Image (cartoon, rainbow, N blue to C red; front, side):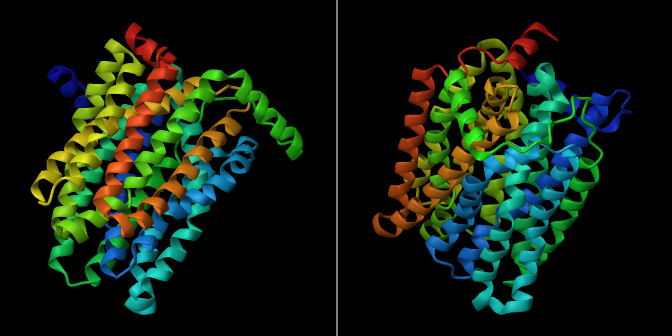
Length: 433
């Protein structure tokens, strides 16, 4: 295992540094550096909900930060998936939408200068409401782009490398941001960190625009009437049972994951009283562990199959909200964050791979839209329920509810056999192709 980890790190570094001779190698390098840029912004983004909390935003407002992209996605993912499926310049849609979303952190940093602290929470929410449409586009385009770049035989390996480099850059960014927040007075500290994150967005844009998709048939630009489209979606779900079972069970999983998203920073700040530096270190630990985690779960998937990884990691993620709700000190949070990062890496790898493996080739844009719609519904409803109920029964109690939903999703994965048959990418890894 240690030898494989060292080899994976060397492979990741070589992918970035060595001359790229083939289309795949050029794309792999661009995909990984794009991930570095995203990670630089993502590490800073950890503090967005904390910023709102320190500005005095209510639990519900903090929950809206997570829920708003979800309601927009729930309404738009399917039509945008159909729209993207008709576009000939997929990379431009992917890169420009990503830049818009990442730039929203810089816009957030400018808000207190222009509107003052009292109006800042409302304006920040408005900025992120406007970012929901490009965020929906990014999620759909990402799935389609990565599937086309890697193909079925290299998908698991490429995503493992990308998410490893993204995790490293996120960890470094979060640690640096946490340190910087302690050096400057509020709110200038948050403003400085958010505005500087724009550099990561530029890095992502520069390399994502250089991705070249392999030659594929030109998509049909013909628009389909909505009744016909609805009939096709019903037929798709009826005919592709493995995809339908996957979408249904992962919906419960996403619900349990999303419910805890606004609860963690609220618990850290209001129950435990964690400092900005401590919160930054929590994110650093959680992201940094990905370096080991992706190597571990790729190895396990190769030996035991995707279904084993999915079950282990889903049940493992039950521990994070449980243990957090039972602690009143800061230091155990670092251990819990490491466990969460370890198990989340496995679900990232396998759920993405099972999605691509089960989504029908014909009408894939629509299938991806259906998948994201269920995610967005869960991500919209769950944080609002969690944040609102936390004000009544307590943050710790709702963390335990989120843990129960994660447990339930694991049982569904087990009973429905999701990922039980190894996706093509895992089979290819086993055979050494």
